[in-house]
Image 1 (tube, rainbow, N blue to C red):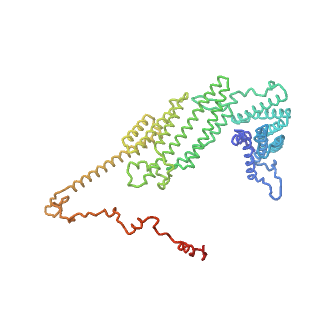
Image 2: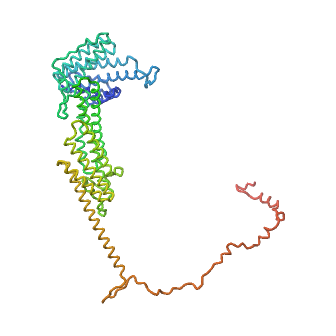
Amino acid sequence: MEFDLSHFLKEIQLQHGLRGEDYARYRRYTTNRLSTLRHQLGLLHDPKRFKLKEITPQNATRPEHLQLLVLYVERCWAAAEEMQERRRNVGGGGENKPPGGIPPSDQFRKRLNKSVKWASKLHEVARIVAHPRLKQEAEAYSLEVKGRAAAAHGAMVEAKKFFSMARELYYALRKSSTPEQWMLLLTKVNELDDRVVYCMLRLGEDASKYKPHVDLEDTMERLAATTIEWNGRQLNVASIKVKDALREVRTLNVESVKTKALELGGPIPLGQQNKVLDLMDRRIGCLNDALAHARQDLRTLSDDRQKTELQLLVHYLLFHVSQETLHRTLFMAEVYIRRFCATEKSLSGGSSSSSGNNKINTHIYSSGFKNKKEITPSQYASPLEIVRLYDTALETLGEMELLPGVAGRADLEELTALCRAGKLLYLGEGWRISLEPTHAQNCYKASLSTLEGVPSTPRVEKLRLVVEKRSLQLASSTLLTTLQSGVAARRVEEAKEKSTQYLVDAGDQVAVAQNIIKFPPDYQAVPCKPVFVDIALTYVEYPTHDISSRTKPRDEQPKPSDSAGAKEEKRWKWGWGWRK
């Protein structure tokens, strides 16, 4: 049985929280991974009757059995570190107290004791079923766990002993390791050296007397065997953090996902587009991490020779960061190009009665289209957005050419020409949509002239073919529009001439003259005299019979009698015959 224990631990630690020292997240991950492995290996307990199912040398037949024991150790250690972190975050006055209270001060030591138990079980099983290298690696890991527990209990003598033994076992693995494995083990050896020095300082010993065992054959070239090529030079990458970041970059397979997304003829779906962009952003982030670590090493280094190599490594990482950013921008340009073609097809309606100037691009990406509603209005794109993306790509190329030894490279010259030609092409598309065919043709010609000075490659020929097709389609569309407008104008003139003929040469046939006014006109009946309506009746107020009552004095007018009021009082009211 064989697997790389150190690489397995390093991978799960960096990917699940320990890159940012998030021990709570790492503990949750180990718990979930343990549950998954127990289900896969069939190590579940009977829910009705408990029966202990342990991992023994007899039933440990797969590497996952040993990984299960390693995860038990890591979960206990992560829980102990989480408890310590919670205690450190609580202030002296009890501020930031976590829910459920603070665990006892010795609780984390119990979790470390539990990790020692699982590490011993791992060493016991691996000693019988594992490969010799894995057996030695499991023993060194067990000693390291025991040293951590001893240091937590204050037993510095035992901790120093365990750390020294683990360091020697890790160092002895160099002969059976690949360069990448050895760089990982070298980091572990340096970490254990620091722990031994810490124990010596706690014991009051002189740390300068500590001389770790190093073979004479282990030179710096042997320790930094992994190299990269940059401008014709081989550069050694000694920093484990830079190597981890570069290794993670290589694991991100962007090209296959991008090729799959571009296989479609129409607009790229949002799901696939976001997947490609996520992988590209992760790759750029890993390269930025490697660049930050390399710059930090450069600031702290004193050797001039190593400084030169680190400076070249920084240039290498800067170039690749810009290159990945350029690839991301060009991918977005392709996305918007397809959206623009689909937008034009959707807005034109796909009908034959549409004008020719607005239908040039509708067939270029027509394969895979089902109907005109394949693109939603929220995804409509303009050619000016593509022009801005090409401007961004040209700025990135300018930054790349500022690096030493980069200017004049053939691939960069080709990319620069392609970006300039693409920018001019879609600038012409903007003029075409604005019904300015003259400006559009000028942009197409400038794009073709830009591509003439570049060596012929498949990408250059493809773009040249697209530009020539757009130019010819625009010229033919303009010609057809001119001819149609000329024919229509001629027909209008002919109709006008026909409608303005006053005399008709009838000959032997009978014809009717047009536009002839009869003179003198026929008689029409009109009123003899105009009728005038007297409107004074509307505004004059004549006297009526009520005039005498209005002119009497106020005291002579009759008053209402009391009997009439009383009679009015006694009349029946509403509400079932009740009187007031």
